[in-house]
Length: 222
Image 1 (cartoon, rainbow, N blue to C red):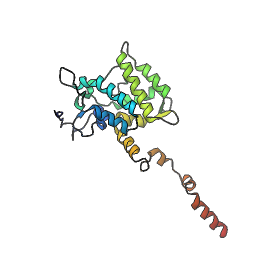
Image 2 (cartoon, rainbow, N blue to C red):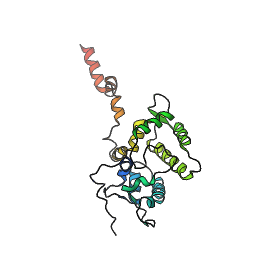
Image 3 (cartoon, one colour):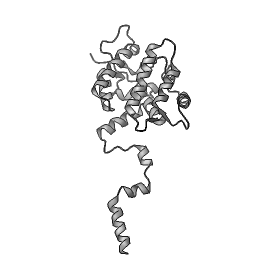
Image 4 (cartoon, one colour):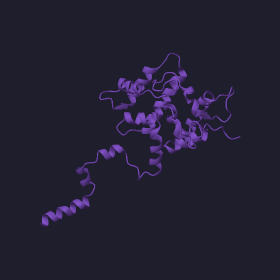
């Protein structure tokens, strides 16, 4: 039986939480199958075991909440239009109950748990954020929030141990996933924006030693 398409997702303005998971709905029919989640996890750089585990936990934990049926879906499908139903406790509150992204809340939480100038977050600061958002006896919420932060840190794997604020935002709005998938597919054709901004004339000269050598000889000749 073919899954019921949800055409209002196509061409319509997605809410923040819908945009967050849109990458995992490759045919944009409004339904995410377990295999879609697995393939998406692999595409953005996770290994086989982690992707399988994430697929099971995500669909087992969230599928029924996004369905309009009384009984659980035997195929564990997730319906994008009702993804706001999976919002759990002990989170940052960045997404509202209707699934919209609260930019002010995001800025507030990031500034609250990070050191000035509040442009990056370390793993320890993220753990402190988890503790600060915990609600009493919300064991499921604690677990999911911890998994979210752990997966985020593992995915970005910052060399200096600090995750940039704009990268966290790009994960929340879903824009980073396609970039990571493209980078993993064509690593030689994708350059990080921050590396481009760091390029200077001095660095450019250092990257072309043979040219520098030629200029050096010409100066000595004249």
